[in-house]
Image 1 (cartoon, rainbow, N blue to C red):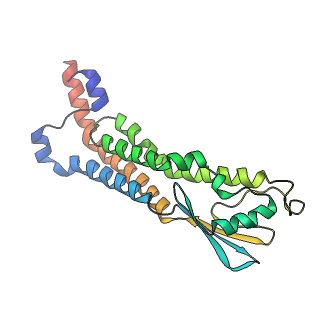
Image 2: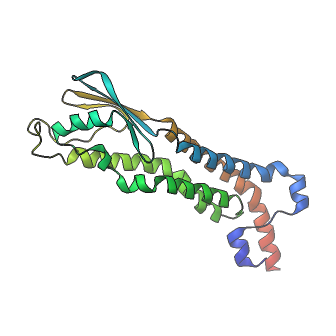
Image 3: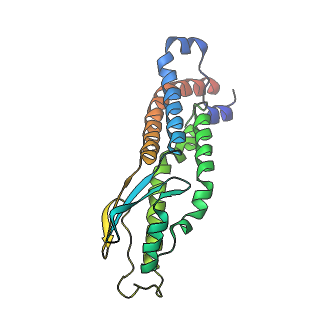
Length: 221
C-alpha cells in the first residue's frame, strides 16, 4: 500500500490480528452501525413539540415538527399568528424541509463509509452526523427569530405587539399567548446518534492508530 492510500484509507487489519482482537476492531464498526440506524429512524419521529395556550383555545393547540413537515393544529396557530402579523408556518425553512430527508440519507451513507476508513479521514465523513442535531436547533432558532422579528405592521394587533423571538425550548409567551416547547423523540435519537458516533471514534482511534504507525514505519524502511 502506498503512503497516500495509507493516509486516506488507513491500514488494513491482518487476519491474524483480527482473530486475536475481534472486539477491538469490531467495536467501532458496531457503534457506527448503531449510530446510522438511530439517525435514519429519527426521520420518522417528531424533532420538536410546542403547545400553545390561548384564551380562544382553553384545551391548548399542539404542533410537532419533523425534519420535513409540520403536524398538529397548524391551521389554528396560523390563524392566531395572523392577528399579530406573523407569516404562516409553512413558509419557514422551505429549503431545509425539501432537502432534510436526502441529507439524512447522505449522512447515513457517509457513516457507513466511515466504517471502512481506518484513518482520521473517517471523522470527516461522520462529522455531519455529530453536528446535525445542533444544526437543527440552530436553524429552528433562526426561523423563530426571523418570523417573530419581522411582523406585518398592517396586522390587526400590530400596534399592541412588539417584535419578539419565540422561545425554542421551555416556556415563553407574548401577550395572552403562552407556549411550552420541548425536544421530540426524533431529535433525541439524532443526539444519541451523535453521541454514539463520538464514542465510536474513541474506539476507532484506539484500534487503528497503532496499526497506522506500524504500517507507516514499514513504508519508511
